[in-house]
Image (cartoon, rainbow, N blue to C red; front, side, top):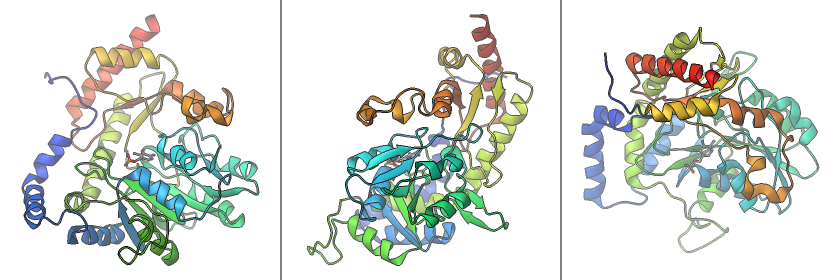
Length: 382
Ligand SMILES: *Cc1c(COP(=O)(O)O)cnc(C)c1O
Protein backbone atom coordinates (compact mmCIF):
# COMPACT_ATOMS: atom_id res chain seq x y z
CA UNK A 1 0.00 0.00 0.00
CA UNK A 2 1.12 3.54 -0.58
CA UNK A 3 0.90 6.25 2.00
CA UNK A 4 0.79 9.91 1.17
CA UNK A 5 3.87 11.69 2.23
CA UNK A 6 4.90 13.92 3.96
CA UNK A 7 4.53 11.93 7.16
CA UNK A 8 4.03 14.45 9.97
CA UNK A 9 5.51 14.47 13.47
CA UNK A 10 2.07 15.07 15.02
CA UNK A 11 -1.48 14.98 13.66
CA UNK A 12 -3.44 17.63 15.51
CA UNK A 13 -6.01 17.89 12.73
CA UNK A 14 -6.81 14.19 12.92
CA UNK A 15 -7.18 14.42 16.67
CA UNK A 16 -9.44 17.49 16.42
CA UNK A 17 -11.76 15.83 13.88
CA UNK A 18 -12.74 13.17 16.42
CA UNK A 19 -13.91 15.71 19.00
CA UNK A 20 -14.94 18.49 16.63
CA UNK A 21 -18.67 18.71 17.52
CA UNK A 22 -18.04 19.00 21.27
CA UNK A 23 -15.13 21.39 20.87
CA UNK A 24 -16.82 23.65 18.33
CA UNK A 25 -19.88 23.85 20.54
CA UNK A 26 -18.01 24.91 23.65
CA UNK A 27 -15.87 27.45 21.76
CA UNK A 28 -19.09 28.98 20.40
CA UNK A 29 -20.45 29.12 23.96
CA UNK A 30 -17.39 31.00 25.20
CA UNK A 31 -17.58 33.42 22.29
CA UNK A 32 -21.31 34.00 22.85
CA UNK A 33 -20.69 34.69 26.52
CA UNK A 34 -17.80 37.06 25.67
CA UNK A 35 -16.30 35.94 28.98
CA UNK A 36 -12.86 35.43 27.45
CA UNK A 37 -10.72 35.83 30.55
CA UNK A 38 -11.51 34.20 33.87
CA UNK A 39 -14.77 32.59 32.77
CA UNK A 40 -16.25 29.61 34.62
CA UNK A 41 -14.47 27.21 32.24
CA UNK A 42 -11.12 28.04 33.82
CA UNK A 43 -12.19 27.09 37.35
CA UNK A 44 -14.00 24.03 36.10
CA UNK A 45 -10.92 22.81 34.22
CA UNK A 46 -8.60 23.51 37.17
CA UNK A 47 -10.91 21.50 39.39
CA UNK A 48 -11.11 18.59 36.95
CA UNK A 49 -7.34 18.60 36.43
CA UNK A 50 -6.82 18.47 40.20
CA UNK A 51 -9.20 15.51 40.29
CA UNK A 52 -7.37 13.78 37.46
CA UNK A 53 -3.83 14.28 38.76
CA UNK A 54 -4.53 13.99 42.47
CA UNK A 55 -2.92 17.39 43.13
CA UNK A 56 -4.59 19.34 45.92
CA UNK A 57 -4.35 22.64 44.07
CA UNK A 58 -4.06 23.51 40.38
CA UNK A 59 -3.30 27.02 39.17
CA UNK A 60 -3.85 27.53 35.45
CA UNK A 61 -1.46 29.97 33.77
CA UNK A 62 -0.30 31.26 30.40
CA UNK A 63 2.23 28.60 29.39
CA UNK A 64 4.71 26.06 30.74
CA UNK A 65 7.61 28.51 30.85
CA UNK A 66 5.61 30.98 32.96
CA UNK A 67 4.61 28.09 35.21
CA UNK A 68 8.28 27.44 35.99
CA UNK A 69 8.98 31.12 36.55
CA UNK A 70 5.98 31.57 38.85
CA UNK A 71 7.06 28.51 40.84
CA UNK A 72 10.51 30.05 41.36
CA UNK A 73 8.97 33.45 42.22
CA UNK A 74 6.90 31.81 44.96
CA UNK A 75 10.00 30.43 46.68
CA UNK A 76 11.39 33.86 47.67
CA UNK A 77 14.86 33.17 46.33
CA UNK A 78 17.67 35.72 46.39
CA UNK A 79 19.91 36.68 43.46
CA UNK A 80 22.82 34.26 43.39
CA UNK A 81 20.88 31.38 44.92
CA UNK A 82 21.53 28.18 43.03
CA UNK A 83 19.01 26.02 41.23
CA UNK A 84 19.98 22.57 40.03
CA UNK A 85 18.69 21.09 36.78
CA UNK A 86 20.09 19.03 33.92
CA UNK A 87 21.54 20.26 30.62
CA UNK A 88 19.65 17.78 28.42
CA UNK A 89 16.25 19.45 28.22
CA UNK A 90 14.28 22.24 26.58
CA UNK A 91 15.69 25.69 27.24
CA UNK A 92 12.73 26.94 29.33
CA UNK A 93 14.00 25.22 32.44
CA UNK A 94 17.28 27.13 32.57
CA UNK A 95 15.88 30.29 31.00
CA UNK A 96 13.68 31.09 33.97
CA UNK A 97 16.51 30.40 36.42
CA UNK A 98 18.67 32.96 34.61
CA UNK A 99 15.85 35.48 34.18
CA UNK A 100 15.27 35.44 37.93
CA UNK A 101 18.93 36.30 38.57
CA UNK A 102 19.52 32.85 40.03
CA UNK A 103 22.49 30.67 39.19
CA UNK A 104 21.88 27.51 37.16
CA UNK A 105 23.84 24.47 38.33
CA UNK A 106 23.77 21.42 36.11
CA UNK A 107 24.05 17.74 36.85
CA UNK A 108 24.33 15.22 34.05
CA UNK A 109 21.68 12.66 33.08
CA UNK A 110 21.39 8.88 33.05
CA UNK A 111 22.32 7.59 29.63
CA UNK A 112 19.45 5.09 29.51
CA UNK A 113 16.50 7.20 30.59
CA UNK A 114 18.12 10.52 29.58
CA UNK A 115 16.88 12.12 32.82
CA UNK A 116 18.60 13.78 35.79
CA UNK A 117 21.07 11.44 37.46
CA UNK A 118 20.10 11.65 41.12
CA UNK A 119 23.37 9.98 42.18
CA UNK A 120 25.17 13.20 41.13
CA UNK A 121 22.87 15.51 43.06
CA UNK A 122 24.49 15.46 46.46
CA UNK A 123 27.87 16.56 45.06
CA UNK A 124 26.24 19.54 43.33
CA UNK A 125 24.49 20.87 46.44
CA UNK A 126 26.03 23.88 48.22
CA UNK A 127 24.84 26.29 50.92
CA UNK A 128 23.29 28.36 48.16
CA UNK A 129 21.24 25.56 46.60
CA UNK A 130 17.58 26.46 47.03
CA UNK A 131 15.76 24.42 44.41
CA UNK A 132 16.04 21.41 42.14
CA UNK A 133 14.11 21.19 38.86
CA UNK A 134 13.98 17.61 37.60
CA UNK A 135 12.55 17.32 34.10
CA UNK A 136 10.26 14.40 33.27
CA UNK A 137 11.65 14.03 29.79
CA UNK A 138 9.86 12.46 26.80
CA UNK A 139 7.00 11.03 28.91
CA UNK A 140 8.41 9.31 31.96
CA UNK A 141 9.39 10.61 35.38
CA UNK A 142 12.82 11.21 36.87
CA UNK A 143 13.67 9.25 40.02
CA UNK A 144 11.48 11.33 42.32
CA UNK A 145 11.82 9.15 45.41
CA UNK A 146 15.60 9.70 45.63
CA UNK A 147 15.35 13.32 44.54
CA UNK A 148 12.77 14.08 47.26
CA UNK A 149 14.78 12.25 49.90
CA UNK A 150 17.93 14.24 49.09
CA UNK A 151 16.05 17.55 48.75
CA UNK A 152 14.16 17.13 52.02
CA UNK A 153 17.35 16.24 53.85
CA UNK A 154 18.95 19.49 52.63
CA UNK A 155 15.75 21.56 52.93
CA UNK A 156 15.67 22.31 49.20
CA UNK A 157 12.49 22.87 47.18
CA UNK A 158 11.69 20.57 44.26
CA UNK A 159 9.85 21.85 41.18
CA UNK A 160 8.94 19.09 38.73
CA UNK A 161 8.99 20.22 35.11
CA UNK A 162 6.17 17.99 33.92
CA UNK A 163 5.58 19.57 30.52
CA UNK A 164 6.18 16.21 28.82
CA UNK A 165 4.77 13.55 31.15
CA UNK A 166 1.23 14.52 32.14
CA UNK A 167 -0.65 11.38 33.09
CA UNK A 168 2.47 9.31 33.82
CA UNK A 169 2.64 7.53 37.17
CA UNK A 170 5.69 7.48 39.40
CA UNK A 171 5.94 4.19 41.28
CA UNK A 172 7.52 4.35 44.73
CA UNK A 173 9.56 1.48 46.15
CA UNK A 174 6.63 0.45 48.36
CA UNK A 175 4.49 0.08 45.23
CA UNK A 176 2.36 3.19 45.78
CA UNK A 177 1.88 5.54 42.85
CA UNK A 178 1.61 9.27 42.37
CA UNK A 179 1.19 11.19 39.18
CA UNK A 180 4.11 13.03 37.65
CA UNK A 181 3.97 16.66 38.72
CA UNK A 182 2.34 15.99 42.08
CA UNK A 183 5.32 14.65 44.03
CA UNK A 184 7.58 17.69 44.39
CA UNK A 185 6.69 20.83 46.35
CA UNK A 186 5.52 22.31 43.07
CA UNK A 187 4.87 20.78 39.66
CA UNK A 188 4.46 22.58 36.35
CA UNK A 189 3.08 21.63 32.97
CA UNK A 190 2.51 23.02 29.49
CA UNK A 191 -0.52 22.76 27.21
CA UNK A 192 1.41 23.70 24.07
CA UNK A 193 -0.60 22.13 21.21
CA UNK A 194 1.74 19.17 20.62
CA UNK A 195 2.06 18.22 24.31
CA UNK A 196 0.15 15.13 25.50
CA UNK A 197 -2.62 17.42 26.74
CA UNK A 198 -2.48 20.30 24.30
CA UNK A 199 -4.77 23.28 23.80
CA UNK A 200 -5.38 25.47 20.75
CA UNK A 201 -2.70 27.99 21.58
CA UNK A 202 -0.54 28.52 24.65
CA UNK A 203 -1.43 27.32 28.12
CA UNK A 204 0.09 25.95 31.29
CA UNK A 205 -0.62 24.95 34.87
CA UNK A 206 1.05 24.69 38.26
CA UNK A 207 0.39 21.96 40.84
CA UNK A 208 0.96 21.99 44.58
CA UNK A 209 -0.36 20.42 47.77
CA UNK A 210 0.91 23.34 49.86
CA UNK A 211 -1.80 25.83 50.80
CA UNK A 212 0.68 28.68 51.36
CA UNK A 213 2.38 28.17 47.97
CA UNK A 214 -1.04 27.90 46.35
CA UNK A 215 -2.09 31.28 47.78
CA UNK A 216 1.20 32.89 46.74
CA UNK A 217 1.12 31.55 43.20
CA UNK A 218 -2.56 32.41 42.75
CA UNK A 219 -1.61 36.01 43.49
CA UNK A 220 1.56 36.01 41.41
CA UNK A 221 -0.19 34.87 38.20
CA UNK A 222 -2.54 37.83 38.54
CA UNK A 223 -0.28 40.85 39.16
CA UNK A 224 0.31 39.94 42.80
CA UNK A 225 -3.22 40.76 43.86
CA UNK A 226 -5.96 38.98 45.75
CA UNK A 227 -8.26 41.97 46.02
CA UNK A 228 -8.46 43.98 42.81
CA UNK A 229 -5.88 46.79 42.65
CA UNK A 230 -4.34 45.78 45.98
CA UNK A 231 -0.92 44.42 45.01
CA UNK A 232 0.66 42.42 47.82
CA UNK A 233 3.39 40.89 45.71
CA UNK A 234 5.27 41.63 42.52
CA UNK A 235 3.46 39.42 40.07
CA UNK A 236 3.07 38.75 36.38
CA UNK A 237 0.19 38.50 33.95
CA UNK A 238 -0.09 34.83 33.09
CA UNK A 239 -3.58 33.54 32.49
CA UNK A 240 -5.16 30.56 30.81
CA UNK A 241 -7.99 32.05 28.77
CA UNK A 242 -11.54 30.70 28.75
CA UNK A 243 -11.39 29.18 25.25
CA UNK A 244 -8.24 27.22 26.06
CA UNK A 245 -9.68 26.03 29.37
CA UNK A 246 -12.92 24.92 27.70
CA UNK A 247 -11.01 22.96 25.02
CA UNK A 248 -8.67 21.44 27.60
CA UNK A 249 -11.57 20.33 29.76
CA UNK A 250 -12.89 18.28 26.84
CA UNK A 251 -9.47 16.89 25.92
CA UNK A 252 -8.74 15.98 29.56
CA UNK A 253 -11.56 13.42 29.34
CA UNK A 254 -9.65 11.78 26.50
CA UNK A 255 -6.17 12.03 28.02
CA UNK A 256 -5.95 8.40 29.17
CA UNK A 257 -7.07 7.25 25.75
CA UNK A 258 -4.54 9.60 24.08
CA UNK A 259 -1.72 8.32 26.26
CA UNK A 260 -2.78 4.71 25.61
CA UNK A 261 -2.67 5.37 21.84
CA UNK A 262 0.87 6.73 22.23
CA UNK A 263 1.88 3.70 24.30
CA UNK A 264 0.45 1.32 21.70
CA UNK A 265 2.34 3.15 18.94
CA UNK A 266 5.54 2.90 21.02
CA UNK A 267 5.08 -0.86 21.42
CA UNK A 268 4.67 -1.20 17.67
CA UNK A 269 7.86 0.79 17.05
CA UNK A 270 9.68 -1.41 19.59
CA UNK A 271 8.62 -4.52 17.66
CA UNK A 272 9.48 -3.06 14.27
CA UNK A 273 12.90 -1.91 15.47
CA UNK A 274 13.73 -5.03 17.47
CA UNK A 275 16.22 -6.42 15.00
CA UNK A 276 17.57 -3.19 13.58
CA UNK A 277 21.20 -2.87 14.62
CA UNK A 278 22.77 0.37 15.77
CA UNK A 279 19.46 1.57 17.24
CA UNK A 280 18.60 1.76 20.93
CA UNK A 281 14.85 1.98 21.49
CA UNK A 282 13.54 3.96 24.49
CA UNK A 283 14.52 2.43 27.83
CA UNK A 284 11.61 2.27 30.27
CA UNK A 285 12.38 3.49 33.76
CA UNK A 286 11.36 0.94 36.38
CA UNK A 287 9.94 3.70 38.58
CA UNK A 288 7.61 5.19 36.03
CA UNK A 289 5.03 4.52 33.39
CA UNK A 290 5.82 6.09 30.03
CA UNK A 291 3.31 8.30 28.20
CA UNK A 292 5.57 8.79 25.17
CA UNK A 293 5.50 12.49 24.56
CA UNK A 294 8.37 11.52 22.27
CA UNK A 295 9.63 8.20 20.97
CA UNK A 296 13.34 8.89 21.05
CA UNK A 297 16.02 6.56 19.71
CA UNK A 298 19.72 6.62 20.47
CA UNK A 299 21.84 5.74 17.44
CA UNK A 300 25.33 4.26 17.48
CA UNK A 301 26.18 6.62 14.64
CA UNK A 302 24.89 8.34 11.54
CA UNK A 303 22.26 10.49 13.23
CA UNK A 304 22.73 13.56 11.05
CA UNK A 305 22.78 11.47 7.86
CA UNK A 306 19.58 9.71 8.88
CA UNK A 307 17.95 13.06 9.65
CA UNK A 308 18.97 14.33 6.21
CA UNK A 309 17.59 11.18 4.56
CA UNK A 310 14.28 11.49 6.45
CA UNK A 311 14.07 15.10 5.33
CA UNK A 312 14.60 14.12 1.71
CA UNK A 313 11.95 11.38 2.09
CA UNK A 314 9.52 13.86 3.71
CA UNK A 315 9.34 11.94 6.96
CA UNK A 316 9.19 14.32 9.89
CA UNK A 317 11.51 13.66 12.82
CA UNK A 318 12.92 15.64 15.70
CA UNK A 319 16.28 16.10 17.30
CA UNK A 320 15.47 16.82 20.94
CA UNK A 321 17.90 18.29 21.74
CA UNK A 322 20.82 19.09 19.42
CA UNK A 323 22.85 21.27 21.82
CA UNK A 324 23.04 20.77 25.60
CA UNK A 325 22.05 23.86 27.58
CA UNK A 326 25.53 24.37 29.08
CA UNK A 327 26.95 24.83 25.57
CA UNK A 328 24.27 27.22 24.29
CA UNK A 329 25.57 30.66 23.36
CA UNK A 330 23.02 32.42 25.58
CA UNK A 331 24.43 30.67 28.65
CA UNK A 332 28.12 30.98 27.80
CA UNK A 333 28.47 33.63 30.51
CA UNK A 334 28.36 30.93 33.19
CA UNK A 335 31.69 29.51 32.01
CA UNK A 336 30.66 25.96 31.18
CA UNK A 337 32.77 24.09 28.67
CA UNK A 338 32.68 21.06 26.45
CA UNK A 339 33.26 17.90 28.45
CA UNK A 340 31.48 19.20 31.59
CA UNK A 341 28.44 16.95 31.08
CA UNK A 342 29.59 14.16 28.79
CA UNK A 343 26.40 12.09 28.74
CA UNK A 344 24.22 15.05 27.79
CA UNK A 345 26.75 15.97 25.11
CA UNK A 346 26.75 12.42 23.75
CA UNK A 347 22.95 12.25 23.69
CA UNK A 348 22.77 15.52 21.74
CA UNK A 349 24.80 13.80 19.01
CA UNK A 350 22.95 10.46 19.02
CA UNK A 351 19.22 11.05 19.59
CA UNK A 352 16.46 11.18 17.02
CA UNK A 353 12.72 11.20 17.71
CA UNK A 354 10.27 9.52 15.35
CA UNK A 355 6.74 10.72 14.60
CA UNK A 356 4.62 10.08 17.70
CA UNK A 357 1.00 11.07 18.16
CA UNK A 358 -2.45 9.75 18.96
CA UNK A 359 -3.40 9.05 15.33
CA UNK A 360 -0.32 7.10 14.27
CA UNK A 361 -1.10 3.90 12.32
CA UNK A 362 0.76 0.65 11.98
CA UNK A 363 1.06 1.17 8.19
CA UNK A 364 2.71 4.55 8.59
CA UNK A 365 5.05 3.23 11.28
CA UNK A 366 6.14 0.39 8.98
CA UNK A 367 7.09 2.90 6.30
CA UNK A 368 8.97 5.05 8.82
CA UNK A 369 10.98 2.06 10.03
CA UNK A 370 11.65 0.77 6.48
CA UNK A 371 12.97 4.19 5.55
CA UNK A 372 14.97 4.35 8.77
CA UNK A 373 16.72 1.12 7.84
CA UNK A 374 17.52 2.43 4.35
CA UNK A 375 18.68 5.74 5.83
CA UNK A 376 20.99 4.01 8.29
CA UNK A 377 22.44 1.80 5.53
CA UNK A 378 23.03 4.88 3.41
CA UNK A 379 24.82 6.61 6.23
CA UNK A 380 27.03 3.56 6.87
CA UNK A 381 28.06 3.63 3.22
CA UNK A 382 28.92 7.33 3.22
C1 LIG B 1 7.27 22.54 26.37
C2 LIG B 1 8.20 22.57 27.52
C3 LIG B 1 8.29 23.69 28.38
C4 LIG B 1 7.65 25.01 28.08
O1 LIG B 1 6.33 25.04 27.83
P1 LIG B 1 5.67 26.28 27.04
O2 LIG B 1 4.22 26.09 27.29
O3 LIG B 1 6.05 26.11 25.60
O4 LIG B 1 6.19 27.53 27.61
C5 LIG B 1 9.09 23.60 29.50
N1 LIG B 1 9.80 22.50 29.76
C6 LIG B 1 9.77 21.43 28.96
C7 LIG B 1 10.58 20.23 29.33
C8 LIG B 1 8.99 21.43 27.81
O5 LIG B 1 8.99 20.35 27.01
